[in-house]
Amino acid sequence: MSRKSPKSYHVKSFGCQMNVYDGERMAELLDAQGLSPAKDADAADLVVLNTCHIREKAAEKVYSDIGRLVKGKGGDKPMIAVAGCVAQAEGAEIPKRARDVDIVVGPQAYHKLPDLVAKAARGENALDTDMPAASKFGALPKRAKPAPSAFLTVQEGCDKFCTYCVVPYTRGAEVSRPWDAIVDEAKALVDAGAKEITLLGQNVNAWQSEDEAGRTQRLDGLIRALDRIEGLARIRYTTSHPSDMTGELIAAHGEFEKLMPYLHLPVQSGSDPILKAMNRSHSAASYLAILDHVRQARPDIAISGDFIVGFPGESEADFDATLEIVRAAKYAHAFSFKYSPRPGTPAAEMGDEFVPAEIADERLQRLQALLNEQQLAFNRKTVGKTTQLLLERDGRKPGQKIGKSPWLQSVHVETDAPIGSLIDVDIVSAGPNSLGGAIPAKAAA
Ligand code: 5AD
Ligand code: SF4
Image (cartoon, rainbow, N blue to C red; front, side):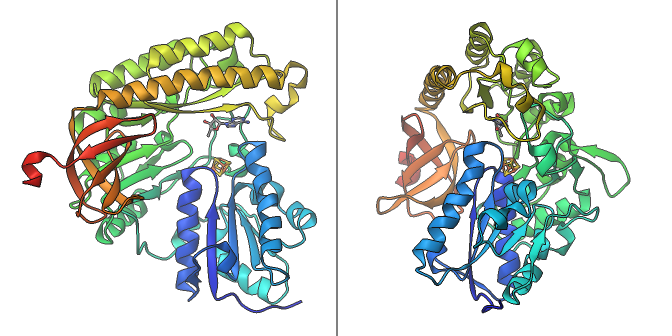
């Protein structure tokens, strides 16, 4: 059955920052087709659900969202596209399970979204989960309206095959975007107003390419090139794997002022037998040695991590080792999750060793209590400092703005300075999740 071509769209992204980036690029594609952004999903003719498959709960969200969209519209349902990693993993199963889905498009095929929308409008089958050799990036429009802090995907996919993780299956093998394409996109972002660029990749520090002179460059070389872009004030990168944390990249943290003092370096567990079962290729000690080197290069660096509790076979002693590595590492921020078996991954086959849910819940609570304590301690240590903020959005109170510190903390401050400004503030208070800032007396006078 054919239907009206959509005139407005809404993209809703779940999961990681790579999905946020993909969501922005899909919005730019639809803008270029003459569609306009709707204020929310209910007002849109086309809703793109850009999904995450990393844990079961995240993957199931898409189905409850589809149900809500269809009900909310009272018969006049929007065109629904499922994009992202659930689309890649479940493909043609999605429209079988949720008949209201019109389009299924994987993370390597979304440059074809406009064609798929046209197909769906004609009532044709609109599914594309190809992982073509040619990159989608060349087919995307130029970056036009970035936020002051913009994402730039430089690397996709993963060859590490941690035994719990779906990413090597949903995002495919590790692929680095070429040097020129990245430098051009960074310049376009800065020309369009971005002040900060976060280089993104599932294994961003595995990125590698030849530069314009044919020399092989790694992430430290790319950071050096971006450091020279006038108008770009801040550089970040995420997510890194400990095995790709080269000496040169560590040294870059001491060398480039624009490279912000923040490193997201997941460890997952502090127990060597569990790390081995996860196929992590590092030990607790080798991870801590990396942190030591990074802190030598940049003593004030904020360290962030990811943790999984309740991995199959995790004993109380294994979990204690995780608490121990947290105490040794002193995190500024961290994400922690209960292990979720993912179809097709090796760990999902270790059923006889699964940790009972109550035990995993209890461990997660203990871990999070410790991580929250560390986060608050880190935030409190910044009270009394004068630091630079990049203003990113309006706060809830009139005149209030929210910006990010170099250590990626959210800081609330009253100021007339416009969004996108870099301003100095005194940090005057600290909570677990945000800080209070004030314009220094000298600057205010
Ligand atoms: N179960 C729980 N957490 C997971 N992660 C990845 N796969 C799983 C899983 N199956 C976590 C890891 C990773 C982060 C993005 O998500 O901590 O670093
Ligand atoms: Fe989720 Fe991983 Fe896909 Fe990102 S790459 S959307 S975290 S499954």
